[in-house]
Amino acid sequence: MIFPLFELTTSAAMLFPIPPFPLCFFFFFVFFHAVNSQNLPGKWDLLMENAGICSMHTAVTRFGTVVLLERTNNGPTQLKLPANKCRFDPNDRVLKRDCYAHSALYDPATNRLRPLRIQTDTWCSSGQFLPDGTLLQTGGDFDGFRKIRQFRPCPADQLCDWVELNHTELEFGRWYATNQLLPDGRVIIIGGRAAHSIEFYPSSLPLVQFPFLAEVQDPQMDNLYPYVHLLPNGHLFIFANTRSILYDYASNRILHEYPKLEGGPRSYPSAGSSAMLPITAAYGHTKAEVLVCGGAAYGAFIKNDVDSPTQGTCGRIVATDLKASWQLEMMPSGRIMSDMVMLPTGEVLIINGAQTGSQGFDKASNPCLNPVLYRPDAALGLRFMTLAPTTVPRMYHSTAVLLPDGRVLVAGSNPHYSYKFNGNFPTELRLEAFSPEYLSPDRANLRPLVLEAPEEVRYGAGFTVVVETAIPVVEVVEVNLASAPFATHSFSQGQRLVKLAVSPTVPVAGGGRLRYTISCTAPPSANVAPPSYYMMFAVNQGVPSVAKWVRVSH
Image (tube, rainbow, N blue to C red; front, top):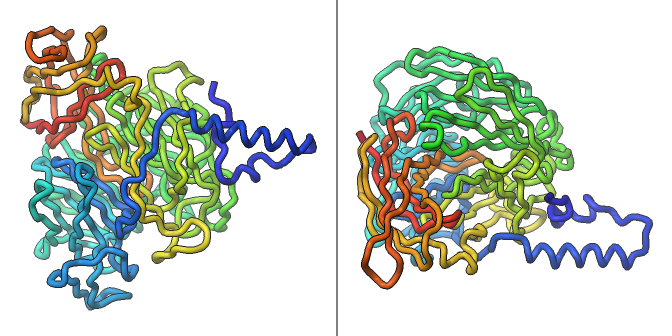
């Protein structure tokens, strides 16, 4: 059982006021918590004291570098552009001539970053990787409202930068929209503020009206950044506010409406989060479950109630079963603005956020310093594990993404309209990495090393992976594919994990360590894994390798 004791944060005095028992016992209680917090699973490392920008959008490229992206109209950052790359924008509200970077490329291998030049405003925009590994970036605010941008990644020692598609624009302005890569390689772009419609990139069809988003909108909106998951049946699971549907984008039809998720609104600005659980070979890659966790109390956003308690429930549903209903579970505490990161093992890391208030500028307090691990295969009531706390509050505009080495990169947090470095919850420029328990030294002998893996696999085709281990393998080594999503505003757009069908390991001779071959079968269709680049992890007894990038294609 996980006790609420381990959810104590910097707001301990509010959560656990001093009772009328002897004061010495209270100090013993606080000391006991401090000691035990250090023994909770996981480890935090400060990677960079000052990244120069506060990343509200974060994505990992196929070269292992990380795109950090800010808005452009909030004035100077702390990262300069090269003198010949200053940005001139007559529509900018703060700096017409801007020599500060609002995007950067971070290389975890060298712990260095390079400033990038973004021209139009990406505030609360959306994104997704295309099949060729290019990052598509759409919409934003002000002069970025209808803009389409691309970042074609390159190796860390080469130069690449943002490109604005000046001759191609969105059909409708998109602010707070969601993107999802489709099986045919197109990206569907759904919703946005006052945008109850759908469009595609590349565009070959006219704008599609989508009344569902208008139906679920309430006085404080709660239909922004809808949660969109591509199911293995080729349809989309779309969640907004408290409602969710099964949507056939090819025919523009709602095929099914799922039961309402109780507990109040869950999407922006009520700031819950969502992830689709692993699609596994155990169910023939046909079953998909969706998890939706947390959210603000209705009205907290409108009233600007920073002390309003948040929701502590998660809803879980088998989205591929039209008879399914939501199963409710209790987290160790209420949460909003948390990022849900799918780990290589198939477990979900719930990280960042706050315990009171709502999403938005200066609308929350009481940060969640402790991440939580959600173990989907554990028994109901035993699925949550509280992990080691950070010392850095990560509130509004924070992000978290999985790195190829199995760590989780945490960036951002700026609950203010512009950069502010004093007062409560200042703008956060530090980069941190959280190492889950599977990276602890006592499990190092279990960590496999991928020696051989293909660079590209075709749907349904067999292929072989060769791994080395320090000690004999006693269980089947999993081979799992993790997408590289676009993380923003508590939702990772396009995130998915596919567990492949694998054979038992076969020992082979060679090398000073133990070497094994694993026969694998690629995902059966693009519905299961849309064509793109994936991180391929070998997982031995819950310990993942460093990933190899593989392209999945037709």
